[in-house]
Length: 260
Length: 284
Image (cartoon, rainbow over all chains, first blue to last red; front, side, top):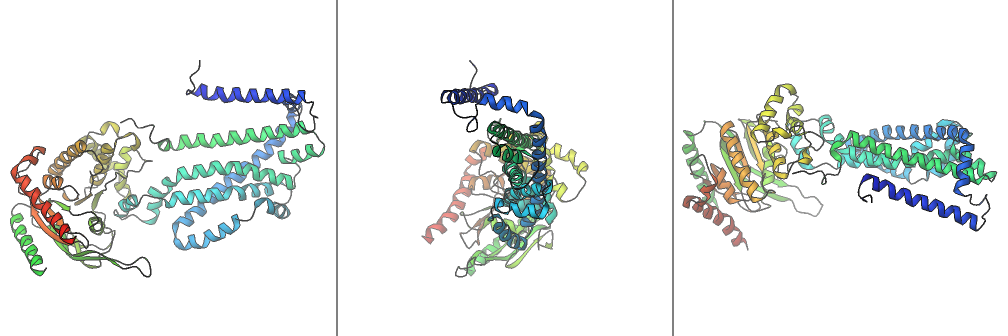
């Protein structure tokens, strides 16, 4: 019997559950003879997926590219804006309200406009992914930059540090964990942004394929796209978590590592 | 009131005479009629008088403790000494120079270790060197030596989170000493530690002080800690803080923990205790 707390145990149990769920799905679909265009069985989804593998692969790369490009831009711009917000009260008071106003507009609603402005190509999808992912990065990073122990600031200020040093030694490293948790939210949002962009107007990408297959009632292939999208999301999310672990070895669970 | 101030002044002059042959001549810190008023935060709020007319000197190499009821403005005093807070009236001079703004020649130890958790123990100790833009590699040896003195050399490359509270506070002490400041200010540094660790830290601090002869201002709530460590104990009254009395502790050096059981120690203890609590009771 595998102990439930080991890594293997943590992987095996959810895996078994998933397989059971798939089996149940398969059995129910066959038992009630549900039409293929309503709900295809997992086996059918898998076989269609393998059959159309080249097309799915090619289009998923488009989506992945748009997601990542939008995400990277949002991190770059988000960190810069967050630093501006944390730098001075004046900037904070001017930028923040605009940011909140902008955030209150549903990005889905302005997607058609973005397509109108940036065309049907990749750029419009990247812009939408960027817009969706931008906000959590800014908010989290700005919070990390401003939420600093007063004593820490007193300590470096008593040593005549200037504003740049204050950011270099205290605020920026202090904000890294918050930046990463913002990035984990942002990456999942960026995928949504890219897919929305492809829904509204595109000639490739998984969002485009989903629309195409739905209109021709090839539901099994729609499901294949969904599987790939969720796999992309999981892989991207855990990549960021992995990078965080490598980059910030000090911010791992603070209590469990105490050895003295 | 006036009589009391004069008597304090007299004690203070008398003490200066006593100290004159014992310590080097120049006072490191001169606090002159310092007053601190915090302006009101809200429109209808009142401004708060935190410190009223405080005057004292600290000689070079002297160990001075400041005790007083909680919330009496000890931390305000500390921040003013570091140049982090402006005095409303009066003057603070450090090494003869009037303090206006941070001057860098100070080491601070807070109640919490406030180590930067993203830096290794050694890099934490070296932080002041980097902030002061001095050459880091010249001080690496000194950092390691300080860490060895407090018994943490083995942990120099670890992150702070693996250390216990007492160990972290030792690192904070090394960090406060790395740039060889002429003044070391400690704000209830051992208050968060358990009694045993606290005693151990007291002795370690005394050892460091004897070897390096720093001028130390030690803010504490513990009367016995103040007596055990200091040359002089300054008792502050409750807010607004004024100097209630100054006790010169005439116990032999080096001090040991068992001095706490000496009669003279107990005498100091009861006298200081009386000064702090009589005042409070009369307020009630």
